[in-house]
Length: 208
Image 1 (cartoon, rainbow, N blue to C red):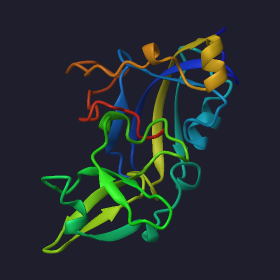
Image 2 (cartoon, rainbow, N blue to C red; image 1 turned 45 degrees about the vertical axis):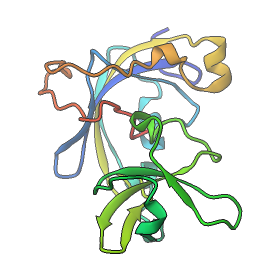
Image 3 (cartoon, rainbow, N blue to C red; image 1 turned 180 degrees about the vertical axis):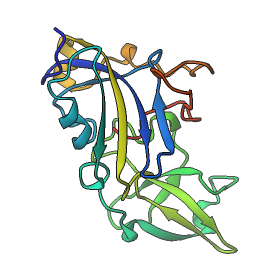
Image 4 (cartoon, one colour; image 1 turned 90 degrees about the vertical axis):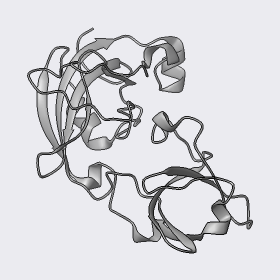
């Protein structure tokens, strides 16, 4: 099994760039990203580009925001009174928060238990993710857009391996936890033929 098709478990290394050519995220060959193909658990533009690729193949593909993370939505930028975040503790620009809302009650915010996977495997029942964009005297500006919303992207991808998934992986559509290596990446882990510029949070999960 060496071809990427539906119901295959695929490991990829990638370098993600914006339209200016800046590297904004990376998973090196030594720590590839693993997913089950055909379950819409990665962005549509990348999953479509991977269909039919072979293990060991490298390619570059541009992904428009329509097939990436969608348009940037101004309605997801909200202003919250500082008093509503007093239980959080110290606040800083760039801090990620989860918002819970029950019925007509006011939303509640908390610090994510696993910030490495904050944009990872989430469903409709999970809390919404917001990032602090500005801290004012009495209010805080929060942004619920994905970090790459509204951005056209370019992926440089190497298909590391294509395998048969386990029964559990086929049922859930996600790789077994043991397959997802969240260990920190050592400096010097190279992406094929390029400089190392791994995302500082160690997650490499934002584009799922």
